[in-house]
Length: 470
Image: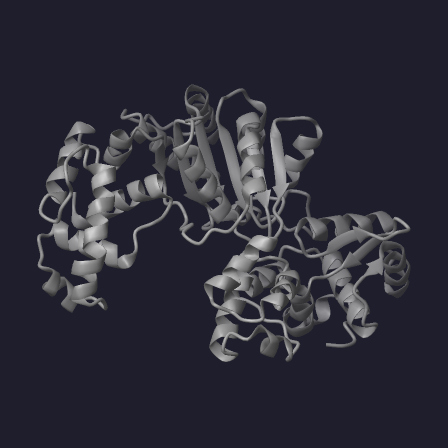
């Protein structure tokens, strides 16, 4: 085991026990211990002072690791490597699982996200614990920056530290859009490694899926596919296949995972809904879709962390950015940097800021070959124009249908417009509520309005409804 592998393994175990990742100075101290280097030499090649590493970081780290690794033996700089290597031998010479074996914890394969700055979500965690115990598939849907991955990371941590409902967790990012045959092969290899046996990999994708389901039946495993929206490659303007031609087999795969008997759970995080999963849920199958909302009062902790002033106005920021943790962190950094931490001074300028991730995710939806249909884009442009030109916060569905259909050059069925509005709501692009007369009101959050006015028209120009005022 080299220094990098050792530090990663210790980091995983600290996370499992303490719910936090090692800080960079702690990793530097570990590296010096593993390679038997002097603190002075290590400090010269790092941005940290020797006094910080030797007198402040190291003593606390050895106390921490003594409680986690020591088994009655005190962990020190000189003893660390010997203690770790001994535990590797006890675990059967498997560097990837020594820490799990020594801790008696369920095994995690894959890299969990950093959740050192995690806020709230207690009700959501309780709900997800219930769903993954009951369903064969759970889909968490929400826009970029809302903390879907962090929520699942926190869920895994909670499950590992409590009664062991699962004996293993597999975390797999699919943001690179793997073909189904490659993804299933990778999962099969992971299971084979965890069970310490050779893998006989079938040729056909259906045979591979069947073999994977055998593992899911014999194990109680939570398999997490992060950024699953990348699997939705179909052109929503031209066909009903959400996955597209090259990824069409995913439809059958998810159907089998949901329909066939096993004791595991497949959990997806995605920015877009999986329509076939929604349909199976309506039929009473063991699958559940959860639409994640923004943070509530827990978001105020972000502003406390950055030391912002004018606490009475923090709620206005949370409402404007709909409790999106990533947006609020970016906002807090900007207010601290450019306004000296004064929320009042920032609000005086009446502007809305956007993160790169939020803008990029919206670009992917609005661009010419993006994930929104032409009709959905038309509705977004029209709704933005109505709200901005008339200086109103919302419009009734009845009014939108009446005016929108009137300006259309081609006939559009009311049912099509309603379906498009449902799709936009599922993607958190449109907000809905009812008034006292029980009429459905449609509105847009400020970041969406700014995006449509500032960016989207540059991407689509002549392809959709002509937006009169930018």
